[in-house]
Image (cartoon, rainbow, N blue to C red; front, side, top):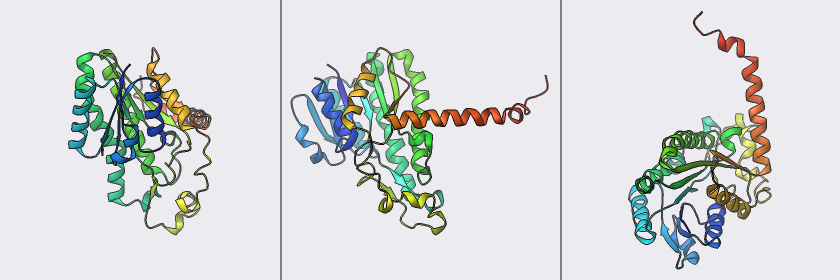
Length: 273
């Protein structure tokens, strides 16, 4: 039995993961900004708590209560966050800062809060939920992709820092899953610019028909995450969904082809031997 702390459990992948962790017999700290959304999961092996990861006092309090209740946190899953769609020029400065606060800086705060306990025990696992969008970088999702790329950059360095201490770190890149991500949770620029109607504009909420038809099953994603965490060597990055795997391979092939095409100019910048 281990203790999992999962952020953003009101709906979607976070909710599915909380249910799967409990079904597997683990203890869980189940959090959401509105605690009433997870109150039905309360029980002997569950601590429910209100948590907005952008509020430092709440982060500190939840970790303290979790350690008091269960003795320590074995697995942290940074799942809290939301999407934002806008052409780069359309993005509102305040909205972009809020996006980074929730999707990146909030995850950093959670990591820093649980690490003293994990380091003391020389064990633990950190799972940061990213998105295949970080690789694909769809038009209209530049800021969201940037926030997730920041998360993945931090995750990669953190993995190297913590491996000698017995703590694993994994970034998870889901493809399209049938959650509320592209519905209620999705925000967008308030004032569209006509010149982007044929690019970013095609992905605005009012014209997006993908919501509710995504191929991914959140329950199966939750099972996959548990399997990865419990494996002998958790991966640096876990792709979830056939669409994510296909897109990732396409991105890698395109990047390698471009690198090869420009190799002569790239290497021309070295000093002569």
